[in-house]
Image 1 (cartoon, rainbow, N blue to C red):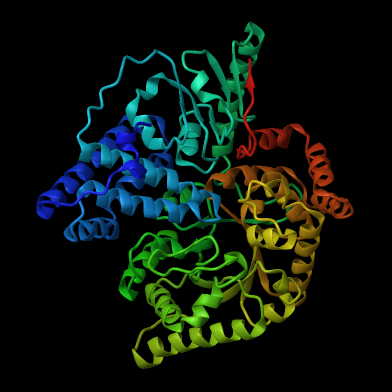
Image 2 (tube, rainbow, N blue to C red; image 1 turned 45 degrees about the vertical axis):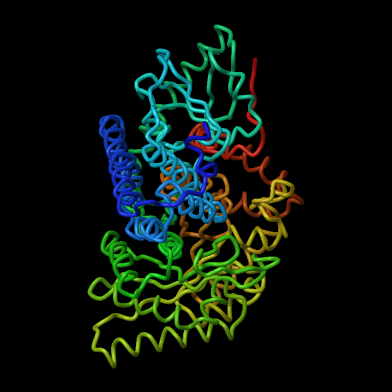
Length: 573
């Protein structure tokens, strides 16, 4: 990347004519949106409807009214368009990078890349390229799907990015196009690969140079098998969710971005198990009003109707800071976050609850979920505030709203030991495995020094999950499980064996998990889970489960499941 389109290298300049700078800015946005539309149209015949919709993501980002208003305001205050644009984009990039959720964290690369493209138009630099080879492996430090605008996709045969993960839009589009993609190749000597013939193995993260004829032939055969495998998964969308021995299971989806809706529905999601309401807050320069929140929530409720939509109340703090609501703490994950902030600022909480309730009028598929519950008094206080908002709307303001189900997340170790007490006070519970695992193991999974210690199949995690479902069952409280664990085909077999029946995950994981559960009998999963609970460490559990599931129907799922590269990808010479 040259410094001319490096957002962090843009010098601070003043606007001589703010009106002219705003015009230049809007023209640059228009030109970038045109590029994205042209790219999407060029790929339309090769992508499914939900994959094609990813390109609408970029146009929607550029159409975001709060983003445009923020840049305009900065220009009106005297900053040049380049300075205003770069500072606003970098602020949003930093916000996304702090988010713990891997899918949302990867949006930082998309925002950054769009920012560079708009900046290129603002700087009016020549974008001509040197002649390109017939077959291209695209290699870069931090690629996003917008990089495809720079090359003919018909020539693209492989993608390698030093940063990013399987949740990146580049990875999603790469898989949709059938292009082998390796993300997070952190230590790959990518500057040395120019001009070399490469084999890119997206399932193992291997990049092979100077391959023998036999190796080439083997990879050609694997490509054929992988294409057929993905076609077979598409056929599972409308198949009922039952294990071979008749056990019913439910597959729900985690979402938070408008563009996820279509992919979620196309994947056959039966409900929304987690709608992250903080995302619209993160993308604004001030708290959204009640009416603005109503518009956001109603769009989701209508799109999924009559399927239930579980909206988690504002979960900021920790890894999710609002730029207009700064929180400075020594240890943010153990500090002021989630429900604690909502209860300390009931005016924010009540506006959000009112917006959710008003948005649900006439649709009646809303469920409200409270995050980071750690004791009974804070749960009861939150429930009292919900009662207050509901009473104001129905009794004083005349709204006709069906009271939604109210639930709580079990993601703090303290809550694990109070599942019965919490379950008696709410309509449903949802286990947040990401934070629960992090807290139980005292491991920050985003810290590279200790990330290898983060294992969702750790014996302590499994025993906690077993205790949770036993307590919830004893008080007859509905229970679901969300987080990365619920979207992993191997882990979900253990969860099924422990007694979990409702799994909420990203839309991209849904069909793979469904395929696994359609092929593993519940009674067999129970046997595997009992044995796993007796094992001393996560490595033994992973090895045992992988060997137990090494059968033709499901082995392909384990090898094909996208994995984030946490180590340097191999360069095999």
